Image 1: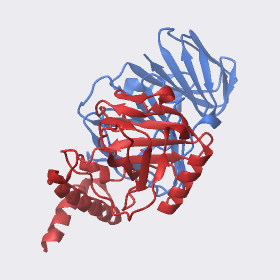
Image 2 (image 1 turned 180 degrees about the vertical axis):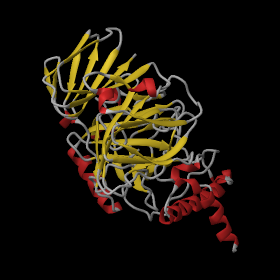
Image 3 (image 1 turned 45 degrees about the vertical axis):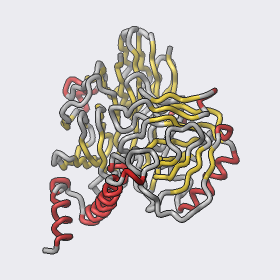
Image 4 (image 1 turned 30 degrees about the vertical axis):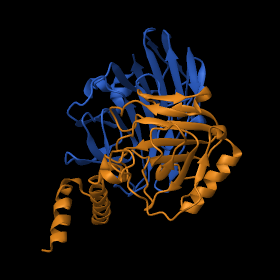
Length: 213
Length: 223
């Protein structure tokens, strides 16, 4: 057996009891390989501008980002959180995550009641990324945060609800927890302060973070 | 205080294989007005087409009920369990330190199940999955305490009833309650309700069901 085949076989053995079909196992193994590649990147802290693990690079070609400012939505709100605080009047300046919560969904931020201009921009960005704007599942995006934020660039899970009123959802991603690449696994939120304006570009390969449980 | 949450005000994310109605904010439905009710975090009312299932994923530190309304729900988890939970049954996952699972539909007909999440009062416990089959008789014209058979790690109860006649329940004014109409319609404390409607009760002393029509109703008793 070739070495690569042996590794794949060992990987699949871990899920032998889960009755997962071969197609899904193949997909999971591809994700696992990407995860391993990301982990190799984590071993090179000199490449990080923040002294910690580097953010995995998207292979997205340079693209015009989707800009979200504090003036683009009426209300910002944390999502069921114990440790996240929204900032500024009506919470629209951004948010602070003090620590990762006890479960994977704790630390999130909602931008609610979006302007028509932002709705149009999100619809255009989604279509350009190949995502149906009516698909409210979260996807991984590259993020550039405003001045005063803990980090300048990073990754987020971003979801959009194309309804009236419309809203978006943000969860920061700590790349030190490699499960972020897996569909369905939210991983660990990155702690810190995150301020608008926010510019995002789609992360490739397109990574659907799922919203079915 | 009683607050009515009409069925048509819920979120409704859907894909070709799943149609989900969501009472509280959840990935895919975001509304800061409806984030939780006390420790009750989630009421997702899901319909899954044959062959559909969610990608395998992990949960931690959440008490999760799966309340199967129609068809059968295929449950698969990282403890090696693969089973079809039938209509009338309730499964409970105490996710604790973490458990990976999928839920879906391995049958030839669509199913419907409710995912009900309650925050635990203790963290990082050993994960547990169990289920219990409830009969119509268990629930007929009374609130059956699901949490007697499937206890959870929180000061909370999940009650379920099927009502064909009027019914009254004394409430503890120091607790809060959330009612959800699973099937049928009824009038509750004078408010006409249809399938998918919710009612929250805070500082109320009684719950009065009138004009039920084979109405399946669940009630959360929360601190």
